[in-house]
Amino acid sequence: QVQLVESGGGLVQAGGSLRLSCAASGRTFSSSAMGWFRQAPGKKREFVAAINWGEMTYYADSVKGRFTISRDSAKNAVYLQMNSLTPDDTAVYYCAARGSLSVITSRADGYDYWGQGTQVTVSS
Image: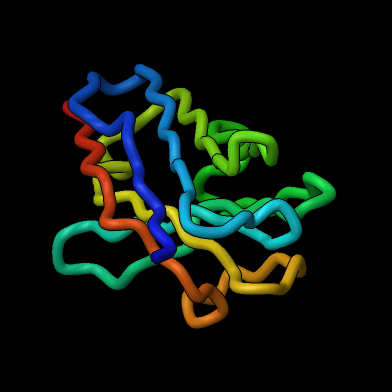
């Protein structure tokens, strides 16, 4: 059974930082693209960042320069370092993985596996 488990969410003041982790089990994703999405209350799930097996990265404009996605293929994990957080970053953050494709996509329907989400709350 494939599982993606996020951790590292929490409450932080504006301007602060958090590092999210996503640990995958049940299969290896070393050759697959992985990404982070987020969903704020009353809003649609939106793309945040993605990384492929060659560690090419892609970011949403809203987080570019503040967030950094990385992966550790040996640990079957992906991370999201979030700096200079603002209240607009408040959301549930989801880790996602493509089943067999390494090509990065910002489309949620391009990902086959999802974690349960971790809450990030940024206070002003």
